Amino acid sequence: MDRSARTPVAIVGGGPVGLLLALLLDHHGVDSVVFDTADSVPTEPRGSTHGARTMEHYRRLGLADRIRELGPPGGHSAGISFFTRYRGHLLAHLPWPGPDAARAQVAAAARTDQVPEPMHRANQMYVERLLLDHARTRPRIALRYGSRITAVRERPGHVALTEEGRHGSHTWRAAHAVGCDGGHSLVRRALGLSYEGAGSLDQDVLGRRATAAHLRVPGLYERFLRGNAAWSNWVFNDELALNLIALDGTDAFFLLTSSVDPDDPSDDALVDLVRRAAGVPLDVRVLSRRTWTPGAALVATRFGTGRIWLAGDAAHLFTPNGGFGMNTGVDDAANLAWKLAASVQGWAGPGLLPSYEAERRPVALRNTAAARELNIALGAIERPTALEDDSAEGEAARTETGARLAAYGQLTLDTLGVQLGARYDGSPVVVGDERPPDDSFTSYAPSGVPGGRAPHLWLDDRHGSGSSLFDRLGPGFTLLDLCTAPLDASGFEAAAAKSGIPFSVLRVPEPAARELYGRDLVLVRPDQHIAWRGNRPPTDIVDLLRRVTGH
Image (cartoon, rainbow, N blue to C red; front, top):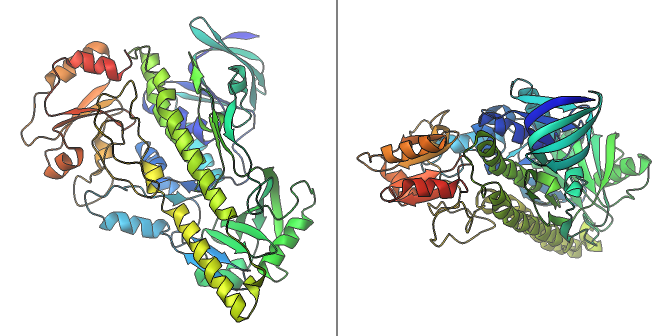
């Protein structure tokens, strides 16, 4: 057995969170190895929603524009439609900007607009392929797909991992290990940790155990959806409820339903279900299928300890309503990556890695609860028997049900507060005791209060590549100097250099920036959250930097 294999960070699980963690570590100058039991990324659909914050992380890696080319074509709506049947009555149509409209919105936005990278719909299977291909170009990232980690143990000064698979048998010695290995996480079980929270919901619409399937349905757009086509296309009546999520804008769909037996191995029931949903015998081809459990709002009791940590589904398991699951995992990776980098590079204090759990676990509890409430809200909408009747009673039922579905659908779209509003108030590595803005599900209010995402500003009127404030922030800590006349930042630079902390100064002498941040000086962390702010340098700059790096 080869005992010479070493890496600063071992990442168990090569899904979107594991790949993003590796790419963000690379961004911070740290090597990693990614292990995954599969031979490559999945070819069956999963989630499709990439929230505004996730898109900002993609932008930081130079990938946002490429990812925005994936999924349905530019003119396709990213919204939601509800039908009694696809050839029946339209209950509600909620348009939402697709890629072309999102780009146009950004180009026309005010300079203080807070959404430089709007939410995008592209299925995980397409995005994971792009992330994997990009990771292959990064010399700091080693990819070992087709390898199973069978044991993870913390030892004095390192983590020992046992690898079995197509690369042979190896014992790896890592400075740190991260479990991004999903709901059945080996790493979580190796730590003796479990989930806590609520499991499946007992409801007819996306409750109990459900079925997800990858389908080809030629002609559905042309024959039935036409001007009401959306990213999410629901059929909702007293007989069945299903959602066909657009994958490519032509004939590929992702089916989610609780209206068939998930244990029936035959594809015939799925084909029949889609034909009944359409109201005509369409050509339906089932490419793959799996069972899943909607309604979960599960969060690990701990997010790790010592040198071993959890991220993504290994740390929290979501119902898909709202599309918060993968996005919460991506934000985990952004938070954890710089703290691992600091530990590997020697400028982290003993409290920095533990602050990952202190900051991210409350967000996981917040976001899983929000997704579950959406699932409950959908299940509570009645499906009256008269819904499809061509009668006054039927019309009244459609009006009432359509209004309730529209309200539910709009709530799943208006989630900017969830997407951008995660805060780390009370964190041991955030300095400041000011009152934070109120948390909101639907809206995001930019704030310079330490703990939150740094407010966005376009630095000129072009709104192009490089003109976002976020594009000018360094990979380490960035001190924003927002004064009209420059302040002396030499004390910060000297203190950071002495401690080995990656540090840069960005002057933005604009009243709009000063108004957004509320102070003359703002210290922005590597994950673009605010660590500290003030109108002059603190009396003890060394102490400030020690606090925000976990000393």
